[in-house]
Figure 1 (cartoon, rainbow over the protein chains, first blue to last red):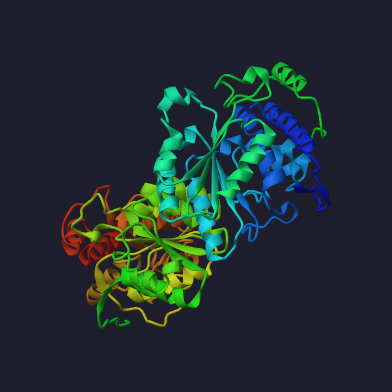
Figure 2 (cartoon, one colour):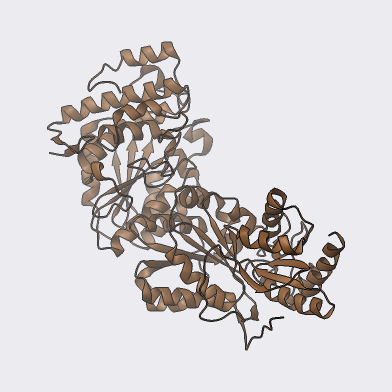
Length: 295
Length: 317
């Protein structure tokens, strides 16, 4: 069973998928409360990536939250390239022991370590590079993966990207490099929710056949059809790990629903970067009863 | 007056290549990346000696900057190599977010800076790079003056933790600084003591400033010459001490007048010690094709321009 570490170094075991499911629901409460508190932030993509980040930090990563170090030697490291979904990142980092859960209360406020988009600048444990300006995280992840190879460090590098983010050219520079240089200790995941700020990705700038594109770029591509089903995500990421070390980078195309868990935020791009008002917050929280306790 | 001589002319980019090779032998954490300009950057020796620590990224500079940032996570000290144009303007946002804001220990080695790139013309002759880089919080900006100093600077920046922009060039220029010099980041070098004017120069203009000082001496004008190899952080103390004595300044650089070394000096003087200043710099213009010498003449970056600027600033004292 996977291990989690508490805020202050006390070890406890997540004994069941049920406990991680409870964590998912609490993270969703955190997300809507965080963006509501400051009337800003990005709830849609955050809600859609809850299962991915909970699965990753709760069941897949080999990591040491209580003793964060920038180099991540001997640990798996993760890079969030689509930095605007910082609410889910912060909530999962806090609730898996990187920093006190109470600090979620400072999100996007003056003098906070929880900036609008993640940054190393304020020294928040768990963050290894700033992100927000899109398309840069894959290159950084590749660099970290190359450093691990040079250091004979067999741990794994992960990254997450938005599907709209793939419109950035740097992604394809990085994709070309990773396969040409056999960066096979790296698993990238695309949050394939089909939506971006201006509307459906298909209408804004179609990605075409994404699987075929990455395969043509020399990647091993695997898919998670149910990216909001925790067991499917855990299985999908564990399967992706079996594809490592075979001379190719690994891409996980993960289908999710933007706004998942809050009915009125689903089926639309409108909650990409909008916060709920008081009434809307209550409506969201009514759908997400407390599981592990609010921050 | 101190006499400066040199035995040979050498390109500053070869000083970088030599420094990188030495680092290859002495520091196993130093790695290098290049965007299809290995020969131009003189990185071939490092590549040959340390193929496992050399990353050819192809013509993809944005990716190169990101990979460099990632390599630091794991303790590496990456040097990126391409022309100054593609090291700055083309990848500004990547440097800003993934390197400077993220405080990554990346050394951006930028060759073929300025007009002296020559015949390739204005598409490749960046004259804005010092300004772009010095505006980034947390970025050190260095522009050494000859082969020996570029080699010393390359070795010095590997010992400093944090992002550095290291600018150098293509043409062969007098190699006059000592081979065994100590390079101290942020510490200006007083080359010539004088009492009438302070000439503050960087990069290829440093030798020309020494030539100008010699001519001025023959005209009875005593010029102090300071080599500002580090534009940021600026050695404010050295400049203020000199200006307190001379009460006027000429700044000289192979860069746009807007945003370069001259503006850093002007800002310092405005804040701490107002004094007349003349600029030797490119006046809000792109370059063009030509030989390096022809271009330096046409765009007013020659020894004679430093002399004229000195005469002009003396009248304003």
